Amino acid sequence: MGIRVGVFFGGRSVEHEISIISAIQAINALDKTKYQVIPVYITREDALYTGDHMGAIEAYRNIPELVKKSQRVLCVAQGGVCDLLKYPPKRFGNPVYASLDIAFPIVHGTNVEDGGLQGFLKTLSIPFVGCDVTASAVGMDKYIQKTILQANNIPVLDCKRVWVKAYFKDTGRIIGEIEAAFPYPLIVKPLNLGSSIGIRKARDTEELRGAFDYTFQFTNTALVEQAVSPLKEINCAVLGDAEAAEASECEEPLSSDAILSYNDKYVSGTKGMSGAKRKLPADISAEEREKIRELAKKTFQILGCHGVVRVDFLMDTLTKHIWVNEINTIPGSLAFYLWEPTGLSYRELLDRLILLALKRERENGALSYSYKTDILSHFTLGGIKGSKG
Image (cartoon, rainbow, N blue to C red):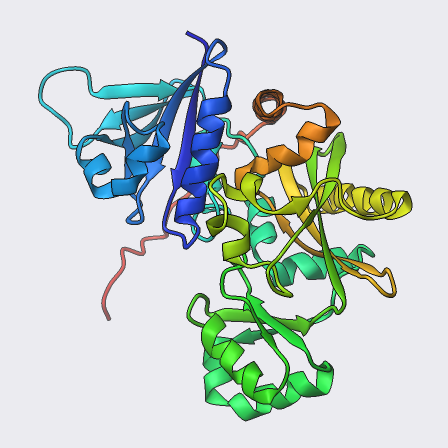
């Protein structure tokens, strides 16, 4: 029968569709002689569905129809595995649709990639692929991420964090503080989104105000930093855990504008991030390549990452200065295209990710999660029963 792998995807995120593409790619690539693959689709309303049709990308052209002919399920921990129980329950028949040995989250964006889904899976005590709760949360919060990296001597751009309520309460003061801190042009972007959603470039005060208005459509907290110009973007993936990590080939994504957009990444192609326009390998020197690969591995381990991530870099093409821009803890298409030039196929990458998750589970299983004490046998509430007055 093989290891039962539940691939979780979708969710309440603006990157919902990209998650579907990434997940279907993985479902098709997983070795069916080793794994029994169960797709678990998360709707935008956080309901879980599974079924025979959910592994085909064509089915998602009409999601309401797909959901109608699929089985809604609930996750329940049972004897070291995760049972997918049919919902609503029926009086007769087996209530278990399928059981999972391991979960494989392939989700992007808030509410799922940010530690939310990882925490849910952790409470079920089911092994799962990828970063743990803390690394997932830090990876999504660009401000905290920058702060940690800066404290560990990883080069990042200085920034300012702006809350939506504070901005609209005193717009003039905040604009003034930003203009005093950074010269134009500036980049305004959501604190906690990926896929280049909600990003705007500002060349003057009027554009800065417009950029905030745009970004605050997608988030309650924005990040402002100076734009790098002339800019070259370089991406590098990392695979491993705290014990050992290795870096992929470097790519140079090609954009239709100064900023790589959502359209450049996804809409202009049909294969998710694997179909975006890029130079692979990147047009950089051997020394720059090694510097970026080493910085990528350091970033991975400083942030406590696990599995596969993609680290995005900014390079000033005149000064050759390099900064870490951000980390993607579950990169689009799992960044498999960055590993193929190194000789690691997508199928082998997925195998490595599952093995890493099972290794972490064995290591965590050796820890004690209880501390023997007789405190409850002696503890009383001291006669306090609670009252309204």
